[in-house]
Structure formats: C-alpha cells, structure tokens
Length: 156
Image 1 (cartoon, rainbow, N blue to C red):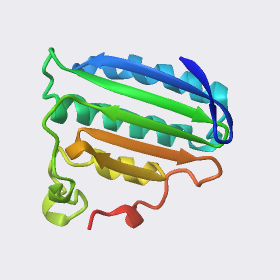
Image 2: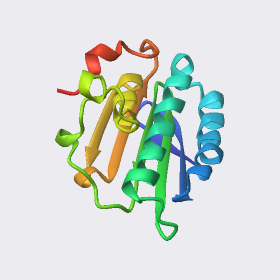
Image 3: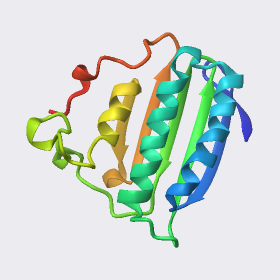
C-alpha cells in the first residue's frame, strides 16, 4: 500500500498479484474493500465496487488465464477523495469486446457465462478494456447512484 499525491489530494494505492485460482478471489477482494471502507472515497457505492471487482477477477482467472497455475492476475486499486479506480490485468490472450454476446438477449438467457462484463458496466461509472482485453479499467465516483439502471448498459 502506498500513499501518493493525486489531483484532488492524497490517495491510497494498493497493488496485489494473485494466482489463477478462483479460491484466491475472496481473500484478495477483502483487502481493497477494507481500504475503501476506511478511505471513504465512494461510501454509497461500496457493494457495487465489490461486485464489479469480483467479476473482473473471475473473468481474468477463468477466461483470461484459463486457471493456469503458472499465470497471475494483477490488481491495482486506487482510492482518491472522490472516486475509486481499479485495474485488473491477466496474462491471457485477450478477447474482442465487440464479440461478447448480450447476456440479456433471449437466446442467451440460459448461458452460464457472459454476465461479468455486463455486471461490471452496470455497477461502475466507467469500464474500459485495453491491450486487446487483457486489462480492464473500472472507475466509480462518489455521489453516483448505486447500481445504475442496467438497461442503460446493455451491450450494443
């Protein structure tokens, strides 16, 4: 954990690397959530952030690294006075965001996979993918309503 000067004052940054094991998700999520609760950067949106982080980690481990024990997932969580930003990076091959099926479409309702990106977009104010899909950046600002209307975030 480091404390750095941000644009809006001091911020706290936490970096962590975890193995590509689903069982590693909860212990890793607990660390930034303690930071966020204490930092007060998005008090009304903590559960949204937690859900989005869990989904991003699960996607990175299962789809990105394919649960390969030799690969890791890298997480950076930054708590500023008025927002939290999270970056999750896997060591996989990436994916094309435009080819991800809409999980709310009638033909996809029964699918087990495909809801993670949808939930991240629903719960965070900003979600963007870089480096061919191996990096996801998410941001939640203070004062934003919790759990936005998911209909606004349907994939196009």
